[in-house]
Image (cartoon, rainbow, N blue to C red; front, top):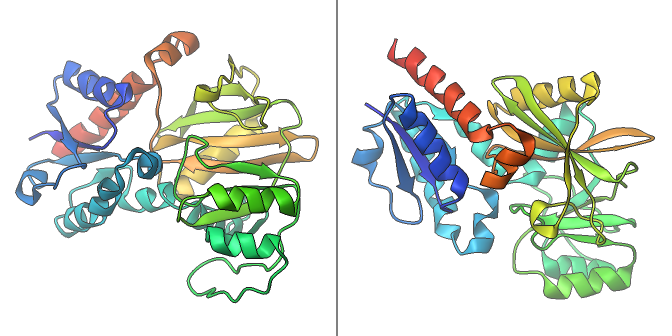
Length: 304
């Protein structure tokens, strides 16, 4: 028996996770969801790890996301556990679902105006009346207040993410957006000049870093953000982080949090953590190794 790792991007971290698991004496196979997943092969594994990112849609891997529905249904039917839990994948691919769930349980999140198509956002920017189908999701407001942030409901790595201050900017942004669903939220300023990133493994905050905000107001490694270990990250933030992950059934993942003089706010939750080799050296912490250790412990418990 072995661990199967569903992946779609071929990141350094995917291979690092597999190699770290193998180094502990457990067979681990990468299963490429860019191709059709063989059901019989999938049932061979005693445990599955999901590493299918929400951002796959921007790398031409839309089919990988679609294949996850069938894979999860098959795993559920045969009671093959997945890390993270089956439900966690759907939080990964919908910021709307994250917002509904977290707000409903009293966690601090930005105010959400709704989830819109680019055409709807263009109409709002022009002050036009728009009729919405609000069934099954957040109610859509007919007005968006500025400053706001608009980003793909399923996405990541700051792709097609806009901080907007007026209708003219919203019109321009809507004209550049792909035909996807976009969530529009209250923009919360990072009052201290950084975004807090927390990595949680097994209900424990294993790493907290400060990630600087760049000139465009966004924060990401590929944009040139600087990282710093957050040695004195407040306990109430770390406790909130573990509470969020427990609620969303994410045993291995990360959160992005904005802090300012008004408190702190959860702006994103990821059920698939990513890291590069130079990050490992930078933090003096091997996230993929520690993730592998946790996964192998879970696997060995399953084997009895």
